Length: 127
View 1 (cartoon, rainbow, N blue to C red):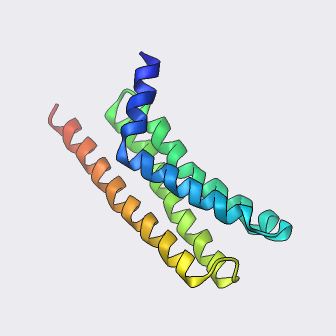
View 2: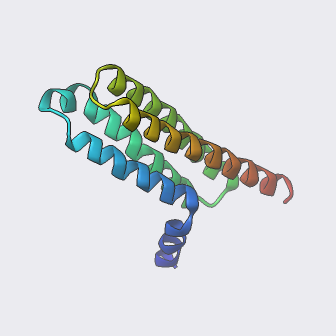
View 3: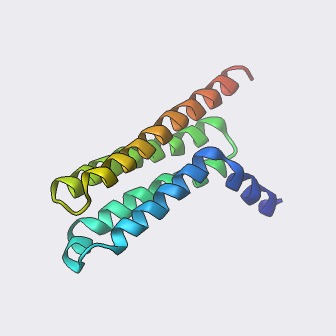
């Protein structure tokens, strides 16, 4: 049964989007100098990875509102990722194009995550 839940998680669109963002974040992190990795990179990659980690943890919860709590945490990490992305651009660690592509993907996931939360709340209210 646990294995089936993992397979289903891998089909969840918001989770797949979060994994894609983690991959992009890791590529950006890998190109940073040691100083940038230490100062800003570790916080950036932690925030990016936390988006998907919280989606996964929420997915594994039984109660709707418990799930929603973790999806809210995921959304918080998404906002933190936007913050670090802006600082990376402002400090010229990433260029404008990379920044815009990253923000576009974060914004898309933000909308999908909000929709997912809304649907879960509607399901809870209809029980």
